[in-house]
Amino acid sequence: MTFTPNQLVILSIVLLALALVVGAGALIASEFRRARSGQVIGRAIRQAAFTPMQPVAQPSAEIEGTLRPELDLPFHWLNSRLGRALVADEDRNLIDQCGLQSKRTQLIFLVTRISLAATFPLFIYALWGGKQEQSSFPILLAAGIAIGFMAPKWVLSRIAADRRERAARELPLFIDLLRLLQGVGLSLDQSLQIMATDFSHVLRVLGYELTLANAQYSQGRTREHSLHRLATLHSDENLRGLVSLLVQVDRHGGAVQEPLRVFSDRLRESRRSEMKERIGKITVKMTAVMVTTLLPALIIVTAGPGFVAIFHSLGGIGK
Image (cartoon, rainbow, N blue to C red; front, side, top):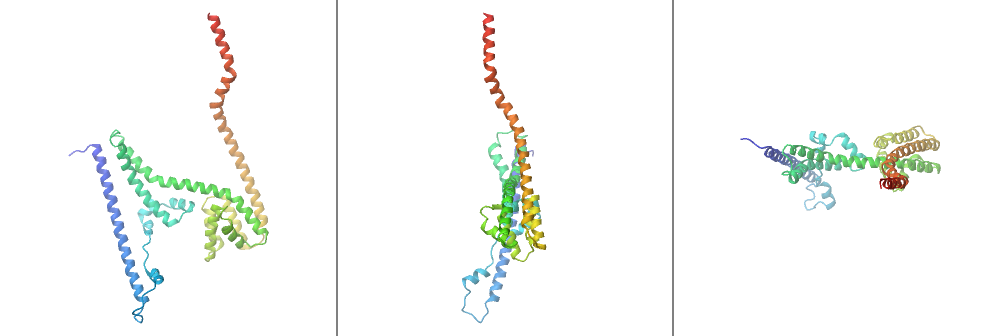
């Protein structure tokens, strides 16, 4: 029995759908087993918590809600081989750079990537299955799988790039506010707390990261460990240098106003040279635009009357 290429493509899509259904069934079954074991543990905890000395007393709503096992999201999928293959370390770093909840967003990213990789080929087949040549149809399906698989990462990359740019723009204001708070006599810890709570509306990105760092510091981590995310997440050398300065001041003490002033001047000088470089690139790009758009119009306006006069003279000679 021989199959046509179109029938082979349909058979492969059906097999892929069956494989996804089987995989989803296995995951659902494992989740049900996990939830059932959680319920057994919850009943054991409730039986141990309420002794026979109180046979008629029922657990209060607050205690019952505390002891009831939560059917939380299956975050353990992310630690499996499939989860680490579909949500790599680079993808998890992008999620952190976007300022999203790490575990929940990683799970949503995993489900979205699998769903789009399976849906896009079916969508392409429904639209162009009978209109395209059979030799190019498998290429379209492979392109649909690749686009569906990579589309969530492209979206996250764009959001992360915007946040990195916003963090770079907020850095000079961050330094100026820190200098101002240090100038009125506040300590470094007080300054960072005030910046995270009172100036979060102007420091959207750095304020969020600083809030996380202060929360980790209040839980017992050192200032160096709590600021490690702020220093390394956005891949900014200036931000890494500022965090290194704050860690040195927190560790050894001393005045921070003068180092911050020097750092701010150096940062502004770097920004000024960067803006000059961008202006130079824009000038080169505008030259090409002017040559292709403005030069033809300029030639028509300036040389047009001369060409018209020449044409009239040549026409008079011919007569």
